[in-house]
Image 1 (cartoon, one colour):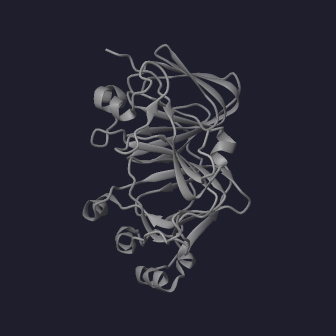
Image 2: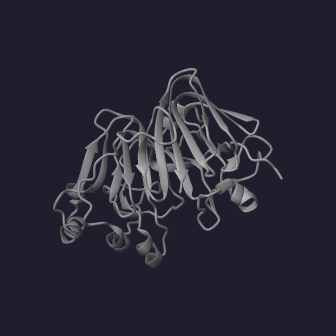
Image 3: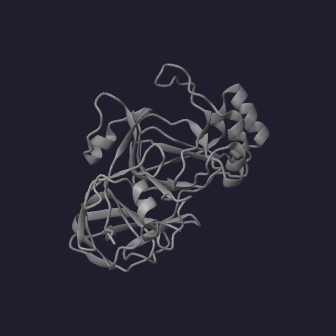
Length: 327
């Protein structure tokens, strides 16, 4: 049987009206010329966008192929999403403010014909004055919100946070949200691509026309009791990694953030679950099953559940990274 090892993937770039060139500037990724790139899909098992492996004996195979041919070894005790890898991992470059949107909860998605999506944002760069719009201002009712759509005052209903690099926001499905201009974000989410736009700041899309809105679906999906949600806290120690904090602990996935000094080495015991690791500064070597992957800023690796002892060694500091584990 083929032995699995830490997998690296070719990013999939997405042109977005609100995107820019920060993914190239910060992470040295070779973006297509002269177009605004808003998303780099780092690990994806979508029917239309399957990440391609770029290292080792499975080079050229896709994550979809790996799940179809080595699913139990990839997932271990974690649960796949109808046979697909359950997480979708992206880097977002928001040079302009994104639309106000919502992702449907599972019970609503089944009715509306979409997919549920819970996600988290870890901010790796934020310009002066950058914000996140999340949830509703205290006291905004469903009727009030619907009126704001009709009279163009949706922005007045949104709760916002001024943010900086290192901040984190958790977004359960049903939470109204928009990313403000000037943010670069690592996003860990359920494997879903369903987004309902409720307001788009009166902008034109790439074709010069207003983008479609999904008013009915949005109203059905929004949690109208979700008032002024806080940023994620960094006060719970990780039970997985030293010098790390648990920033998301949810039934779908857990996320830790670590900061390690140069030369630090740690042997991560086998979890029998897949691990996604993403660097936002420094360099880290990952060794498992006689394979070594060196990661720098903006690079991600997927360590299959079947990998034996995983040795992590800091090459240059500060090595700052997030680790995500699907449940």
